[in-house]
Length: 88
Image 1 (cartoon, rainbow, N blue to C red):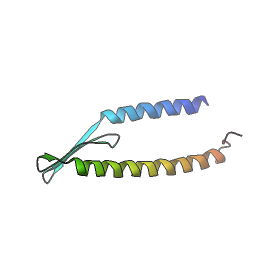
Image 2 (image 1 turned 45 degrees about the vertical axis):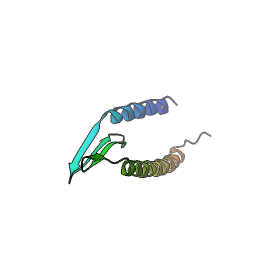
Image 3 (image 1 turned 30 degrees about the vertical axis):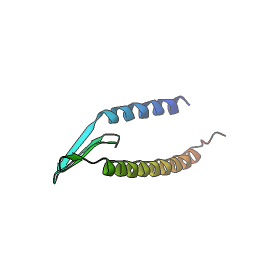
Image 4 (image 1 turned 120 degrees about the vertical axis):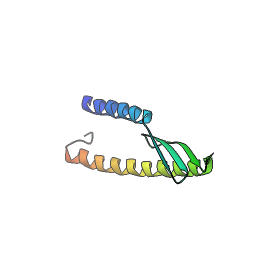
């Protein structure tokens, strides 16, 4: 149980560190600023911030992250069974 808490604490620290990072990409008069935890901070097209596209992209990224998290949970559940875990 202590190992799981330690792993969770490390994951939370990593998440916080990623949120502090920023990536900026500019190409063809489009600028995107995204945090390391994949949140769109700014989307500028032809010098104008476009909130509609930003919101749609943010929702798509969130949904893809939820799918990935669900799949990882399925895999980790299977690993617990293989490793003799599972709470029994």
